[in-house]
Image 1 (spheres, rainbow, N blue to C red):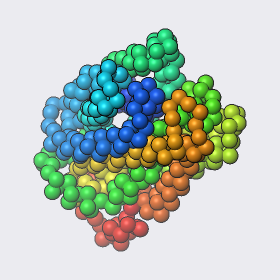
Image 2 (image 1 turned 180 degrees about the vertical axis):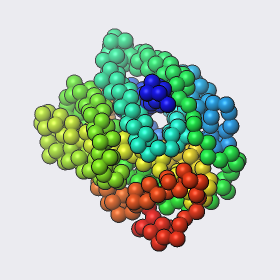
Image 3 (image 1 turned 30 degrees about the vertical axis):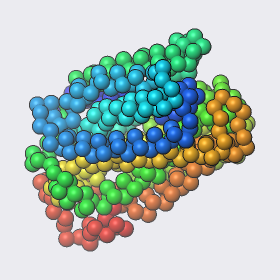
Image 4 (image 1 turned 60 degrees about the horizontal axis):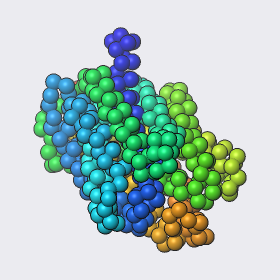
Length: 459
């Protein structure tokens, strides 16, 4: 394969994540703030709405996985959905940031419906995109490179949203936040649609492991014999839970706890741009270390940044330094996470002969959405319990709730994640032999006790 063809595919794969992140970052960073401070919805009900909508949407993730595993087209299993979902995805991004002329109850219903529909469209494009990696290449190093390019371009999309959103809201809205958010969502929605179409054109699925129809029974057979995936799945709650608590509380933390609204956009930009630098180091680290060790090092750097910010108080320089360190580790961890995500698929094929790339990825997406829902719900409940009042000076209890959601809870979750992965994830120790067996058409576990299904040894 020529270099230009390789990089065309890498760019095509990565730009889909840029597209998704333009919308995802709007949701993660600004949607809760938009609901409470612009649309005027009570924080408690917003939190509950996040929880319910994400749980409902999570079921769609699992169904989408089954759809992918049963899709057979001349474009592959995953690629067609980038084309199908592109335009509706951009449209729902706009509708989610529109404030209808209803009362509080009507707006709450409208927010629930549009948020749920946007999440569903995100599922249609993002689950196939995430499931696509095992079909693009069977080479572990190329998967890491593809994941790195994906994170680089995805982080670029996140950075654009983090840095440009509030200035665009101010400029396009001319002081009116309702109009500002609406017009800004239009800009990002159009760009997201365009880049999804570009991605559809550039990627090509080359790996086709099995053509047997996928059923829930076959999926369950594969997943129950896939301990590495179980360890990976549990860690989704810990890793992404920490991330969602931080992104959801960022605007509140700097607007109300620190009392510096200008710092909000700067830290948001750091949290999305600096991870690019961390991501660049991952291919080099992955050549010298096992993937789980890269994950642990990255998590330790991330945790160090959180510690700096915890003790910084409202010192601007210390907060900036902490945010840089935190974001560097976050970029490394996310890049190696997406590379690791494809490996349990190969383990499942090797163990059972069943390719569950779609259903496995969709369940991972569902668990991530549960983590996001839980973080949003807990944040809303904690803000309400602390007496949070939008656009006002906050009570001591409300300020503590804000800092807990932004720093204390994420730090605890990262510590738990490091302990879990460090103790139980062992797939790295055997992956090269598993990959060699698959390339040779071997799907049975060899008579080696190191490959038994004991969680402490086979993961």
